[in-house]
Image 1 (cartoon, rainbow, N blue to C red):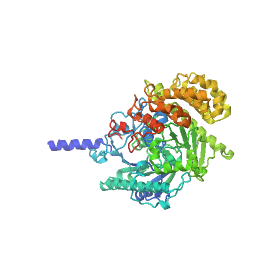
Image 2 (image 1 turned 90 degrees about the vertical axis):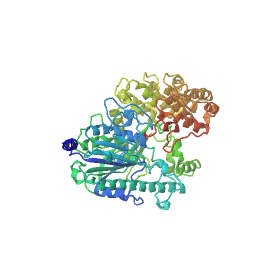
Image 3 (image 1 turned 45 degrees about the vertical axis):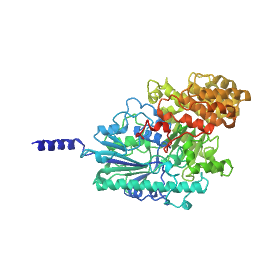
Image 4 (image 1 turned 90 degrees about the horizontal axis):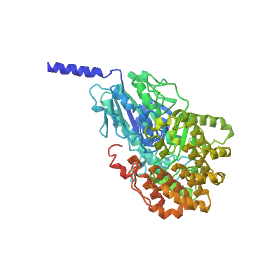
Length: 634
């Protein structure tokens, strides 16, 4: 009797898991672009993913939205653009928008067993109940009998840190590598590129192993498989930079015959889809596959499942702070052209991110630039200022080294891409147009997303215009920028000061009195921008006053961590003009209060760069001070 009761219970349990739901397996890898055989790369050795693409399909233009891991995964987990949630900055931390969920919560509610093996690293505070298991041991094998699963296996062997690891057993011949037009052709660059391809081969082998496990378990016929990488390659000017080479990833999908009705409409064996997809689309696509209507707050578009949408005309990317260095870039592609809007054009693409300089290619590339031995195409990465807008034809210029933004024959395309970028910023209420610390201040008591959707707290249209005027470098914007110094909104005042800074000596002269007054602004970020301009382009007396002010703003014991980081970035940009405060910098504290441990090591790194020291950080580029607190959470 007891046996019969147990059997009936098991039958009830079995039937409670919907038989009409497929299993879903995500095979992901780190730091590599579409450098795979199935994408036409003859140098690559990727037989397993190539075979998956041959029986499934690939997307010819898939973007990660962010050119770095934490921001990319933050995009995926919510189905929202991090500039709208406040999670755009590398290893930042903020609160999820109110009344939202991370996508595995929806899947679990639908009966799925959800596992993540094993990296999380989100820039949003994770709620309870996201995963059934998230660890190095997490697997679909641990689910209940008959339960549908969603499982991620993330391969780290292709991470940036591994392409510079020595000694190394070579698979690919460095002499045969294609060196892109933006890199110098040196032995170091060839070695790093070849080793990168070697690591992609290992990532492919890992994917093959996971697929074999699925086949051996008799689950292949009922499992939809996705393979993708988390952003472009770990090589400099790929990782951390939101152009196509930093954002384009391989994305291969396989829908077995049992579940082909849930596949993208263009699906077929060996198909190479022109549909534009990006990471913001993954969460709504998952929900659509399992029969859930994606909530309206998700900003992506389902490209598979019962609720799939029509193809989109554009996909989008972004860059905020990368570790210790600030920038603000937005990018768009229509598949043919890539467009970048540089809201801080006075900064080079190659700001000194400590971890990036561990790669031999970065160091030799910088030395050749300093020695004047690079071609114009190879110099773009290091030059400042950079162009306010960049437009590249990916058909004729896949390496994105010939900027078409100033070409009259491309004016219509430029206007179209610019409008797409600005329309998205307005639609999602892009909170990344605020200084990072200002965003947190305005969001006190709520979340950055909810703050940004309150026009009283965040007048997005006015701020977007101010940021556009500031970064446009157009002389006709100067009058509006000068008027902005008197605006009641500190973000307008910030962009006014930044706009004058970006214009160099001319801007400093045009708004001289306004900048002097702005050094006493109620916003520390306005103070930083004003003192930056005066220290860099003002008189000797003005520089003598601005430098101690910047030291005070950089003092973590007197300011919040974001003000300190902003001021230290400013001082770094001043170069030799900051020599009078060299001893004062050595006395600044490297530790202080922070809203989250993920910010804790950046002030120390900036100070080390300014004073010649070297802070400790781990192989993933995280401060050692963070490792104990977040052990097991990566």
